[in-house]
Length: 400
Image 1 (cartoon, helix red, strand yellow):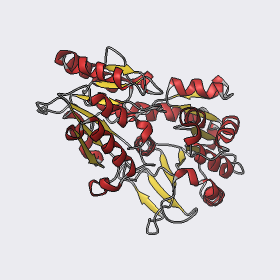
Image 2: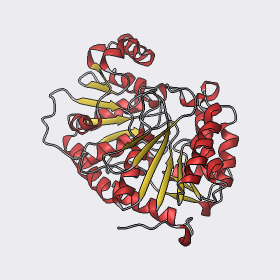
Image 3: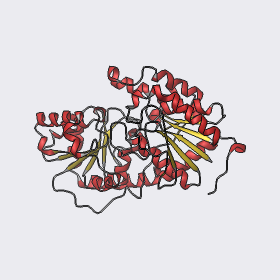
Image 4: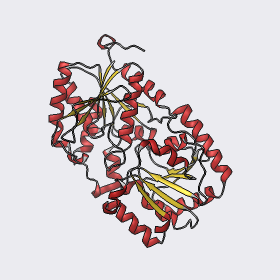
């Protein structure tokens, strides 16, 4: 098949760790690469956000990335991109008229608007993955939600207009059904993990118990709650990876807030902010931790717990979103209520005091990641979802 992926703000080639660059970028990159490996011709369309961005780039995994001129050629927060979507759709409409595709897979709600608009005239089916839902964000952030006011109504409209919705976890599928999506039109296909790159390594754990938080440094990720828990774990240290480059940490507002919190709690000497960490260095960093902590207030899926499990590390996570599917309490890790540093501290205290339990969780997590969440399996299931909406006579053909 000739597959078009639309990912308006999450370029698969971007450096992960910024405010708007995280799990979706990883998901799009890995899925595009997995589908290309299965013999499909995959092009990812993302908005041009630098003046010198090449029009087309071939990724090492064999898929193509096209930079679409829509709005200024500079970084724009994703919540401010809505006015530029018609220009994005016009460009795609012309591209697909010149170079037809078999199926369009939209990632995020704004990409869905673009995809439906551009694919309508060509009669190309559209598959939608939301990655996050406005209803959930509004529920948890209230007046602090910076999404466009029309987001929720537009997401409901997308549920009616796309050919299939892929939810990444059972919690999201439940939310979509509450929005009015017919159960037969949604399919659950999780995010995945590269179990070759993310694997257990021979590592000498530090003498001091080490906790690791890694990902985007935004308030809802719960880093502050991990720091609060550390105050009740006097023997432990906390590494915080993600956010801007190390040289810019001193001026990052969220890092400054977190450092002030650590100072008020008297744990500033046991919290280390590493800044952005390259993807190739993440597995070794995870392997250096006694426990990986992932306690967001809400989470559409959460790739970090999967990566930690693949590395054979025990996970303590929030009982929210995709973590309800991936982390099996008492088997691969533990789940705690979000925004409860007291419960988090107690759970971590017990786990840090029990090396045998940590090792058992690590082994079980690795086995679960390999058996259920490899990207090869995710790509095959996604291909099957495409085939369910693509008319056989429209397929361009594929060699496997």
